[in-house]
Image (cartoon, rainbow, N blue to C red; front, side, top):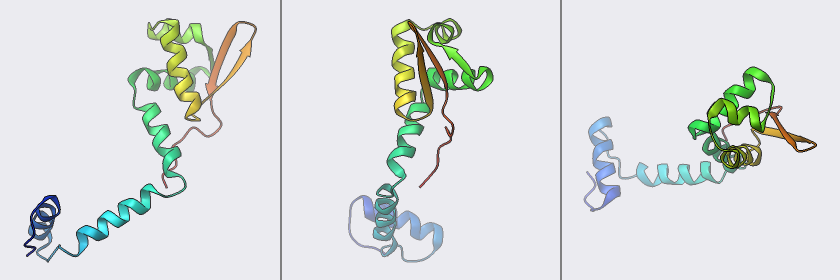
Length: 122
């Protein structure tokens, strides 16, 4: 059993209880694996998309767009009960994350789902 103290020791102890094997060697391996995954090319994009969809109002806007194909900002505002500024902010986050596309027609902003809005995990 691992004899050092600290978070790694506590984790190793829990892993040893679960597996019945010495876990002191695998804790660093798991940390290295996590660093490798976080450094993968698609990780930042996936993280940005997941964070964008983690907000209830943004997820609601995406669900509305999925059902109506395209909505103007005022229609999203009417459906959600949010202010124009708040809708604009939320839609900008979704656009930045690549989930939603926009087009302007005069003073009106129209939003639709991006061609491939799904999250691709690295």
